[in-house]
Length: 335
Image: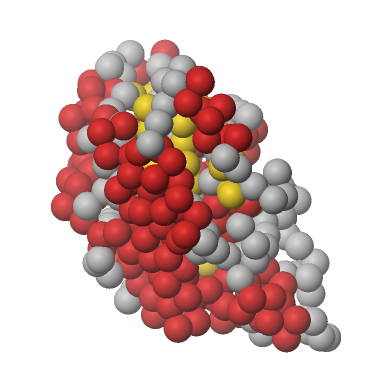
């Protein structure tokens, strides 16, 4: 595994050198928890990035970021509308129900693992029995989606209109938000759209162990501070998490890293062509490759996940060697 060409996940990538430098610079005396100088800079840094006032909290994992964000807007008897293949449904071991004290995920299908206004309205239309049913209180979408699809600013506005009209909170799982923003070529604010909370992904984009929850309503952050402590995520040396996040925000390193990852994904896509199952709009490539062909690729030194009976998932990162990505695309073309 250590010597293979890694396309399992962007989590396999090393920590960016500038992030290590920032953590080393933070390795000095300062206030504990989130009272340190670096943690105190997060609100201003994200407010500048998105061009509006916001508050940001660090946590160690994307699961905690998603669940604590949702817990700020959903009550234990409420529900969260999300795609049936959303990370919060498929890959978080029931954590939303744990953090939200029993709140339910209300699932809906959609091409490319994306929500649509129509799908959301269908879920809402089925909630008609008052206290006997779980009421929807929030929508959670993923940017970029679990199949690497990016929501355009126009799509986000349309979903935001549905959320506003129905009185629902709007959360964005942005584990690969940077990759979506890089693909779209728009401002961070446009890539986030009218969401209330954003889980701003860092670990997949060069950090060691830090994610940010961005609250576009700063008052919501106050409730989340209590929930973060109760959930065991108020780390005593928070300056090291803040240092990672600020390092990625400095000089738009977060965006440059995402552009590198996306460029490598496109190199693979050039070779995969007719085998592609979804458009490549971030740093994930899904290909139709049968079992015997997978063995050929693995024997050639490529590491990746089997996704279902007929496909594989290939994920690039900021540290992916473009020559490896090109070689993988050529290997797929030669199957």
